[in-house]
Image (tube, rainbow, N blue to C red; front, side, top):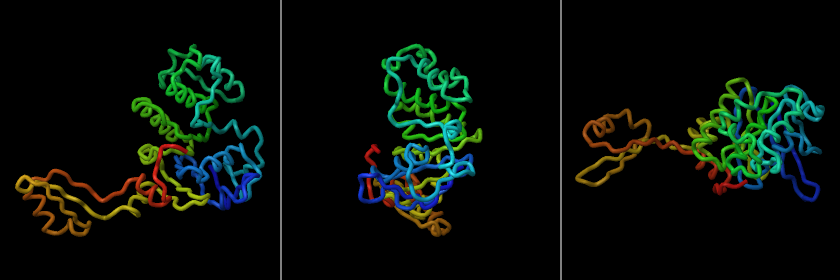
Length: 285
């Protein structure tokens, strides 16, 4: 769906590039995670991909065509869910959606979307009276108004309670399963691990890793198994390599001890984030 080659970008008042020659592609029907610390270039890259910024160097291709050759018809095929909810606070939810729907040639029935996100009963309430979580969910409806081929989602579950976060994640999966493609940025590594087919890590305007969450865990994790068991009332922990678990000593331990926990040395995406970017997660972009 997207091909990005040697992408470079410098803001007019800056003395150096914000994006320093990055390359990646996004397959059709893929959820692609784009991760990095604050100021790394995530937002700039997304703005370039949705044509909010121009004057870049390099090449961006969308659905087989040079992005710079597209005009307004480009927006018929994409949906964007910004991190900060943007709506007209003095209009109702339905008035907001009706306004934005008229911008597109292709439109969908919003009632099923609003019902799924728990907003239908409040469709005639002023958006200024919505809670932050309701505004975030309304953003998701707006991103899907035009039945897009491609979704750009920036922190789509940030600020949502677990129930509504689950609904949004299920909707993202359903969109992908229906043939849609997703570009996802998030600091919630659990969501990224759960949803993304591949992830890219960017730091200082450069990509440092691009791979599936599973492959990254194998690369950065430890090939070990830790076993905890009780011995005379004390908790004892023993660590075995993946090769050692085939040996008799491991089998004897499992058979003879009161095992309490067994854990592999698999790392988490959060630990990988810190390792490859050198920056701890703080929950902000």
